[in-house]
Length: 164
Image (cartoon, rainbow, N blue to C red; front, side, top):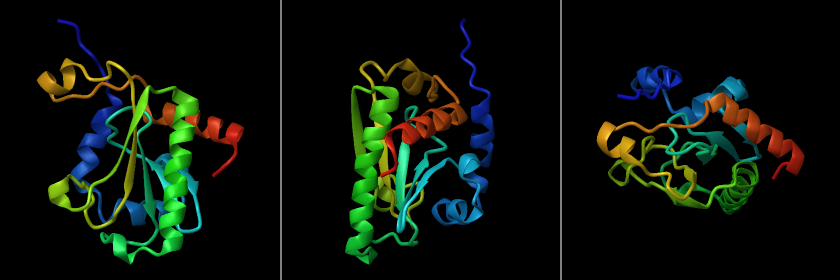
C-alpha cells in the first residue's frame, strides 16, 4: 500500500474545534497576517486563506463586521466584498492556473457554514481531475503544497499584479 503524508494537516485538525471566538474577528485583530493567512486588508473587508481548504488556493472574503445577515451589510461593504471576490479569482487564476472556480456563500449552519455567525464568501479554484478516490474512500483531501507555500506564492503574485 502506498502512503500519502500530509503531516502539517494534523495541527489544523487538532485545533479545529478549539478555536475560541470567531476566526473572522479574532484573526484580523491579531495582526499576524502570514500566520493567519490574511492576504489583504481592505477598508471594510479582507481576504484570508482557508485553513481547511477544499483545494489549494481556497480563499475566503469576509467583512470586518460580525454579522450572519447579508442585510446588515452596507452597500459599501457589499461593493468591496464583490471587488475582493473578483480580485481573488484573478489572483489565484494568475498564480495557480486553475481550470475553473467555485464561488459561494453558505448562509446558516444547515447550508454548510462552518462559521454561521459571520457571513463570508468562498473562492475555490478547480482543476480538471481534482476529485479522486481519497475524499470518497478515505475521507481525506490531499493538497499538493503547504498553506505557507501557497500563501507565499499568492503574496508574490499580488506584489506583481498590485493590490485590489
